[in-house]
Image (cartoon, rainbow, N blue to C red; front, side):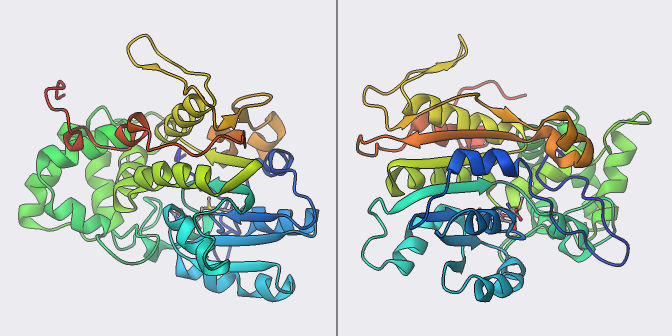
Length: 353
Ligand SMILES: C[S@@+](CC[C@H](N)C(=O)[O-])C[C@H]1O[C@@H](n2cnc3c(N)ncnc32)[C@H](O)[C@@H]1O
């Protein structure tokens, strides 16, 4: 099933399945909520993490989601927690503005005791055919979490063959990216792409699969979703904002579902904690005055029982870190680079596939 958050969701008969939070106990252990503390949940979704925080301690949560339907559905929880939960419809890259809205004048100051992100799509988004995220249902080729801006159909019908190939290869790690891009550009001259089935059928004719393999369109749909929602830039910006917003001792917990996201989180936190690392070809230099400390197992993955009960958990990785006293640092160019498609890199001359 899809590597992004919200893969197989076990849709209940008669309606979309409720999102089952992944690595919930591990996330709570990393955040260690205490009474009087202030948390930010950047990916509210069905509110699984937010609820767990509010129930674990008499704390306060500012929860964000760019999807207006998630915010509308969360209003009942706002009422239930009696002033301890504030919901804001916005992107998590804009978390400083959101915090500033709740605590005016303090948006750029470190006011938070914990921040959590659970990257990707929710089961509700995947299971609603009209949102256009899934190749399992026929729906409009949309994929916009916020319901505005460029849709997947806009990208598929207007981008050049080279750009499409880059999106499928870089964001989806799809080996047949160029063949798929060529077929799209050929077919769209006759009939522009409008539906998920139209695109999934075309990819199904190109990518061979054996019984038991993931659906042939999995990687390409993931790639389009990342491009439509600018997911990697969102993550890179949010990590830097989290560094500015967390108090010394504040906890950061990021759950991601595929290697591109995890690499961004890993490089950012390895660098900021002074650990360094990376590969011989792409060494990562740790900073002199670390802003984060990494403790314990890193990353944390789901255990067998959770993976068996919830297939989405199989690819989940939690990376947590604790904010230190050192002042926040400028943007990490390696992290910004990791969020870019090759053609968007300022340095040219890299080999094109
Ligand atoms: C995997 S779900 C989160 C599920 C949640 N942890 C729970 O327990 O119910 C991801 C949610 O984050 C939202 N989201 C994804 N990217 C976002 C972004 N850049 N800014 C704000 N919300 C985002 C999606 O709309 C979706 O509702």
